[in-house]
Image 1: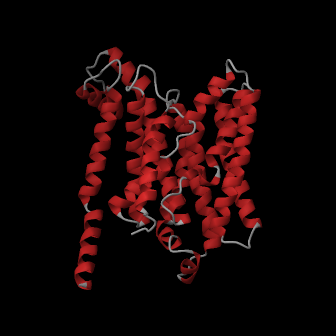
Image 2: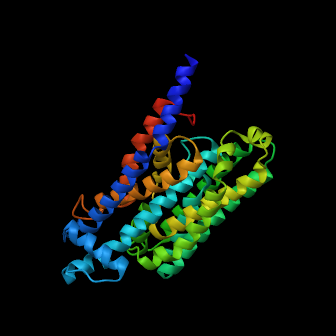
Image 3: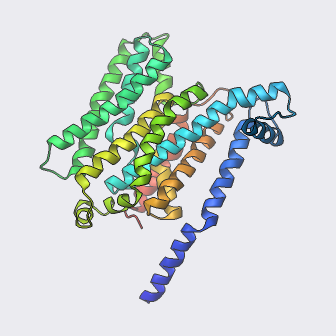
Length: 350
């Protein structure tokens, strides 16, 4: 009986790691990218989109109408690239946080990254700063919030470090939320308040290739430690005592991984606003597909996160006459999924 169970587990592992599990999401992502570039009020045929992309990559020319080229390359391409990068970043950060806290119900917001970034952006809007300065304040605010949370966690050593970080994140997030509310009260109700509300709901409408290029180095810098330390993440998910027994210095490794995931999240949120639930539901779906091994979980989360946010953005700009903020759609999908996780009682990593 045990041998049959072990064989079934090995077969399941082979299926999860098989090429089909990777080929289908990659193909779906490519098709979704073509659909996102061609779909809208000005429709562009898929073959024309493919020709334009090929010409863009090879430096050649495509026999496509000039208007179609403008729409695809200058209007839709920046937000498609932004959706791919931001979705992948948030999903990677979510997978990291869930592994560190050993809980699939954890998201990148748990340490106050989004709240800190929101406070920084809202302050920039109230001060009537340029867009680049608002994005810079949002980025700095996210990093500062997690730094404050971690300092509290270091100061309070009498309790479990993971639980302390979570509780400190809740407390710091509440303080930052109060600051956001205060600034909304003080803001100009005709110009600044609508801009604040729209930013807090998240959108890719104003993202440019320059914005993506500005955040890409920070995202790559944050992903490098996650890739290099992916095998140690597997040990971290066992718990501090087990990880230390296997030779992993958790006190040094945890802040490094937290800082890397925070850098990725803060960079993504700084240009798009708050887009919740991506870092919660995507890593869990990836875990169901490829298993808990972080060596497979990280690339699967990146792939699925990019496709998920691209699909949500496609719906956001085509489902109604006006564009729907991304935060609304991700909440409509994420909240029921979160309730399903609670109802199913999935706490383990197997």
